[in-house]
Amino acid sequence: MTIKAVLFDVDNTLVDFMRMKQIAVETAVDYMMSAGLPGLKEELYNEIFAYYRSNHIESQKALEVVIEKRLGSVDRKILAMGIIGYQRGRDMSTYAYPKVEITIKEIIRMGLQVGVVSDAPSEQCYNRLARLHLIPWLDVVVTYDDTHEYKPSEKPFRLALDRLGIGPDETLYVGDWPQKDIVGSKKVGLVTVFARWGEHKNAPDTGADYDLDSVEKVLGVIRKINTRENE
Ligand SMILES: [Mg+2]
Image 1 (tube, rainbow, N blue to C red):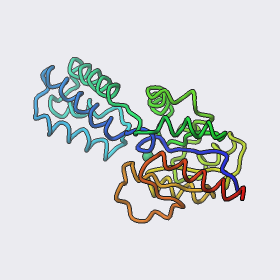
Image 2: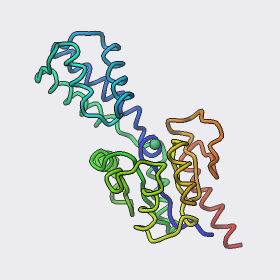
Image 3: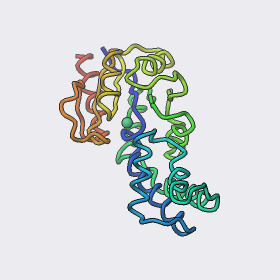
């Protein structure tokens, strides 16, 4: 078995998503308060995150809901400030984790293909990848809109393999969410890497083939497997 491709989860594996979200929401709250939204900053911030948790982290309605709760209706002036604040906060805080770029470049230099399998909607997923300038380097991008199934469904993983034209045992999959990323990719027979640098730092043993604390260590895993093969 030789590794010929590496597939990554996007949010909290390549992109420090929760940090981005926190700064985006903080800035949105500042902007809305400056336009007259009543309330305490921390309270508003927590309400928005509570809405994300009980709906969807990508929900576009959170700001409206918080404004309506305070004022009884959606004040367009405050909403406009919230949206612009959100976008400005987001744009200045969308970063890849350290060494993501150099790791992907090195994987390509080793002659392997690279791709992503994300549960994010295509618009948000492509926007985040574009902000990081990662799109030109990726051989395949699978988002929620490609299969309409979330991980741990096998479908998004199988679609990525089909598009690359390779088998699961030739592919490394790197993700930070045990129940979605590791369970899903294992079902398909991929070689699994748990991204402990992501959102689930304290997860107990995930059952992944490899458990790494930083992204560049993926290179060592590839070298180890592919050297063993050539011996
Ligand atoms: Mg993730």
